[in-house]
Amino acid sequence: MITRLQRIVAWLRTGYPHGIPERHYLPLVALLGRRLSDDETRELGERLVAGGLVPADRLDVAVGYLRITDQLPSNEEIARVCRLLREAGWPVRDDGPDSR
Image 1 (tube, helix red, strand yellow):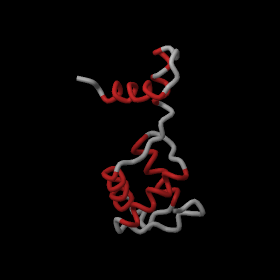
Image 2 (image 1 turned 90 degrees about the horizontal axis):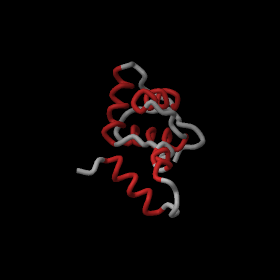
Image 3 (image 1 turned 45 degrees about the horizontal axis):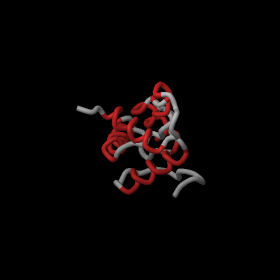
Image 4 (image 1 turned 120 degrees about the horizontal axis):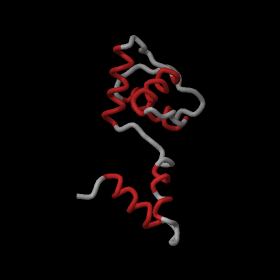
């Protein structure tokens, strides 16, 4: 059975220049941007409510994102998560100039 990582590496290899040594493919996975799934976004909303952080703001969302992924979120991901939380009915304060 092919693991998820093997499928990702195979996908990277199809569009990557020939001649790159195989040992250099795996570090490329670290460069892929992380996004919260819809389930993770709901989980983040529930954590914000449970922690008394509603209405949430960008910092609350960023800290929650960090706790779920162990990665710092991009401004685009914070804006996306804020939008998804609002659409799901969670109150989120102004998410700044990068909001979409």
